[in-house]
Amino acid sequence: MRIVICDIYVKLVGHNLGHIQNILRYLEQHPSSNEYVFLLNPEAKTIPSVKTSASNIQIIFFTDEEFVSFNSGYNIVKSTHLLWKHLVKYVADYKADKLIMMMLDMFQHTIGSSRLPCEMNGILFTPYPRVIPPNDTLRGKQKAAITKARKIFTTWWMCRNSRLKKVFIFNDRETIKTMNETLGTDVFTYLPDPIYDYPTRQGLDIREKYNISSDKKILLAFGFIDEKKNVVNILKAMQQLSADEASKSCLLIVGKIHEAYQSQLTQTLEETRAIRPELQIVLESRFVDDDEMESYVGQSDVVSVAYINFYSSSGVLGLTARHNKPVIATKFGVVGDLTRAYQLGLTVDGYNTTEIKDAIQYFLHTPNSFPEKAALFVQNHSSESFIKTLLDLE
Image (cartoon, rainbow, N blue to C red):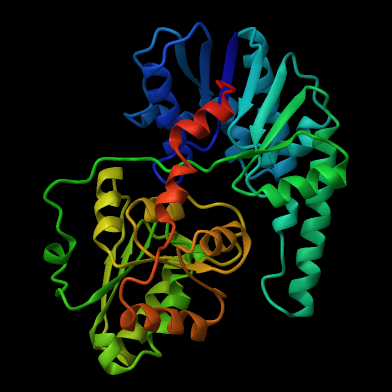
């Protein structure tokens, strides 16, 4: 069987690269008679780890010309429709028996009217049941209702394609049940969001590197620092700490800052340093390698996944659980559900700075209370389980 695996978001930031790296590694270590063709975005060609030594694997890339529609500023419907034509041609040229899309979301409207030369599976990252209003305002509720209605329609439209056999959803059995019942189908199925095990950067001591004293609790916010990561509200919450509590705290912000978020974050950083000079704030604004990321998480005391406008699964939660570190998590969506189910930490409303402050105070004054079921969470979300389920290797 020849299988094309397509991902158009393989970059140095985000989870997509991790998925591709680990699938490649697994297939190299577990040879089979299947042939795999990885079809990736042009930028992925520049990433050294996107490579293989296996004879049954090919890695190919969309050309810059083929990908130009996706970066052209066209609306999502037009840009993905144009890119989909090239994708289908690759599938036909390679005589694929199956296509696996690593992210279906932006192609739903196109898939519904497409004539594919083979069957297809894929991952849906933002299923419509997880769309909820960002706040209690009428405007917020109306906007969420419109978004949800649009997503219901595009999801239904996608499911019209008889070639679509499985749509995987990370870590969310309740949503899968709801969608199958509502849309009268059985294509939606469970996929464990994988927890990858990377080596730790040798010799990296973050307390020594940033001169953080041993009596301070380190709260880590890391990843691609944009509005979703909610660092501004975390800073505003820490402004509410007492002078003594602030003196025993360090906020460690690690990751490339989104250009659109830079001004707001800089302003809040200056404001926080003026209000709470006792608080230590460390900012490492750059992409960090996997082994560095392991060290940052492993040596921090608490990790923030108190995101806003985010209702899907998060790989940060699994990484934190593997290091047996507690989290301050959003109370909404999959992250909130998993945090409560496995008792991984405290959940808060990411917009409510008082709730965030209360959670920070809890961890300052209550040692070793979370996580309680981190080992079970890691066991249930292994990389091997993810790959075997996705590639139907059971």
